[in-house]
Amino acid sequence: RVSCMTMLFRQLLFSSRLSSSRNNTLSYKKLNLLNKPLFSAFTIPLKMNINITNVPFFTPFFSSCIQNELPRTLQHEVNLIEELYTEEAKGEENNLEETKKAKPDNKKIIKYESIDISRVSEDIHRASLYNQGKINKIANKKERRGKRNWDIRFCRKAVRNYQTVLEQWKQSRRTSNDGGGFEDDMVTPSLVSLVFSSLLRCNWPPKELSKRVRDLEKLIGTLGKTSMTDELSLKLLEANGKAGNVGRTLSLLEYRKAYAPKYPQEFMYALQAIHSASLELRLNRNNFLGDHRQPSIDNPTRFLDAILVNMHQRKVPLENHFAAKMLETYACSGRAAKAMHAHYKVVMKPSEGTKRRISMKWNDPPPYYKVPSEISHDQEITLPGREEKLTKLEWECREDYWPRPLAAAFSFSDSLQNGGVGGYAPMELGIDGWNAMIKVCCHRGAIWRALQIFRETMPNRNLEPNAKTYLYLLQALARLGDVPTMRKLWHQMFVVEQISLNSRLVEAMIDGLLNKANVADSITLCQDVWNQVGVQPPYTTHLKLLEFALANDYIYEARRHVYVLQQIWISTGEINPKLSKPALSHLFEYFGYELLEEDFLSEFRDEK
Image 1 (cartoon, helix red, strand yellow):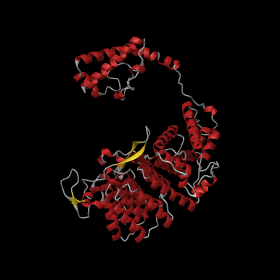
Image 2 (tube, rainbow, N blue to C red):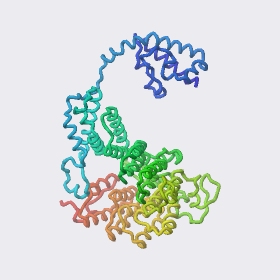
Image 3 (cartoon, rainbow, N blue to C red):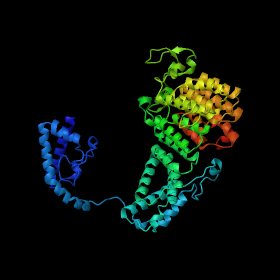
Image 4 (tube, one colour):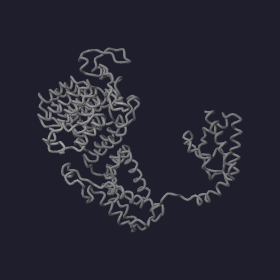
């Protein structure tokens, strides 16, 4: 503590002497330590009677350090700084306004009078709609996808102009006290609701949207001209929910107790806030930190309890669908390290001459205790760092081994079934609720526990698994490369249960085969599924198949998959631009191979 204070005062003394030697007045910019990250909390005020105890960063704690614990040499330097401030602070205060005049602000300021207020209001009304009348360039794209398109740039411009008007109004202090000016019309509750609707049309990511929502709320709140209504509070709840402002969303839920609940609209916004806030963790999760050192949003139990208490106080019934959505929030923050394995890495392989091309280097397989097919159900194993011998299911049920979010998810599920959460009566989870629990177990690496729910819990409650049940299990097993277990589930799903296949299920099965470097079976599966049921994986899976084949020097397998793509083209009559003939030729060339005209059917060959 003494050494830190010594370094601070010596640096401050040196800066002050340097400043006074160069200029006649004390330079605030040179003495300000804000530019140094180490001293970011320290500032030096200008307009004050210079006394070392009056400086804001000299709290009583630091004052006691100065009086009792600092060396005498440092105390002498403190006295020199105090004298220097006393002599030159007056000169700095007198020349402060001249400095401002000499250095005008270079930022471009939009004049308040130059903005058409009526046009701003019209743009907000137009931007709040999904479609502002702009015709889509691709006519059949709107019909094929069934989505409404809107002009994102126009929405951003409309919100920016509205915010500029309010900022200039605030700076110029032109608010009318009689309440009849056009300024009051710009901050009516109905127009503010449209402003936040327009802000949600700007297509900002949650992190940027969160900042803009808070800034706009503060700006409107400082004007003090807008009254809170049912419509406005609901729109604020939607905006903060999609932006990921969990605390603000819960505060708005508490405020809306005075209004009639609009279930499930506003409570879905509260759950959306948890999902949006977890997006940053899901995209940039650092599994090297461990589950116990992840951000607090990784365990959303306290937020779910607050939502349930609010629902119960407003006499809103708790349905199975909403309970399943609440359980899914435990799986929205990404996958733990126990649920994943790095099967390969991409390297640059020397080729002809000085050229280098993309290749793949396969890593060691995952540990045997991660893969369900490597151990039996009753086999006792010892995990790294542990001395006990237990079955893998018993290990996964121990709360001291698995992270708190997984234990919290099961505790929350048990409380829903036993009653007592938020004052609700006991309820039976449906198929969606148990699918959510399987998803949570798969994301946390508790595969045996997920299989227990699938094989024991769901049959005991007379619940039949659906496509989502198999999808979560296949995706979890594909990340570990457990192909034998995947084949058993695939047979049970497709042959025994006769569940309709979809592109996601085919994608999961192909991913598992590719993680075991089985490119040939992956292409065969893609072709067989298309010939039997007419289902193909997403186009990204087709590209992944080709990349795996070319990176592992399986050139004939890559050309075979090109033939499979041509079969799909002939049957559907559509060609994805990412899988077109020029795109495939470019992909082969990128990996150092050439796609010949002989590799295409006569319908797709170029006429010479």
